[in-house]
Image (cartoon, rainbow, N blue to C red):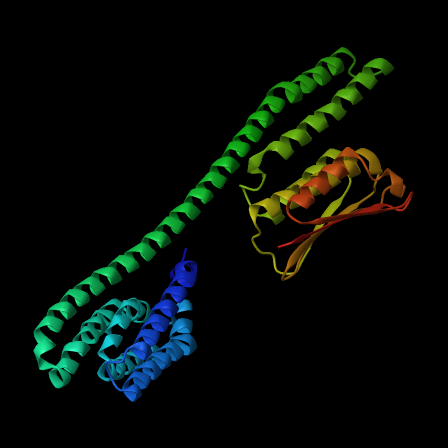
Length: 376
């Protein structure tokens, strides 16, 4: 929480408090009959002018945490009007309950203390002219009021500082919790990737090796079929390991990871895969990069398994407010009503997690284009 946010949090209460004190003191001054009517009206007009300065100038400076000469001008103007009001009707001294907190909000600590001391000297100074006998008593009252006002100002500022500190600590705690959750998920994904690699992938590799040792030329159709099936499942296991590994983006940028995925696709399928970038490559939120990389891997896996393509083009297009991933192949394509496979549904689900949109364009014998657009 910033200081501006802290002011906004307590602002409605302060505004109501200031208004109540100003209205009550003005009403009491007008109702009292200890002074001539013109003096009471002058005091009420000074109070109204102070309120006007607060509404038109002070509250905006305070709410936006602005500190310049306008703050000092507003504070000195308010103090001057207070002198006029007290000189006209000493009862206006009760307005101190609103002015002291106002000064601490309007100017830095040292000027605020000086203003508090000065504003509490107004009544004794007026007494020197009007009623000198009251000066000693009003000096004692002013000293107590000034000390209490300074303490109250320190206390208010400390409350705001504590609120800001608590807000910062809460933000850090939420960030730490999110990081712990992310690391926990990454650790679980790494564990699953390791399990698949150490069991399924190695098991399929051993099956292929044993079958090829038994029939090196794969003359037996059943053994040849078993080898093909084992190779397909080995490829699936490797794809799962790649998908689950949280280190896919740790060793380089998103563009590096996409190029590695395209290179691996070419090695496994012998189908050329080119990667092109438009716009200024820039870092993206991790969640967005993960979705883009997973979509690239899934799209390439679908091409390898189903498309029978002769080539694949991968495009990453960056703009100011979004990033677009396009994977296009020249394979056999498919009908629109067939675009509901598990892989595509998984890509759609991932896209929705980052407010992205997945579009699949395909026709039989006319290739397939997958477009993923994400605001970023």
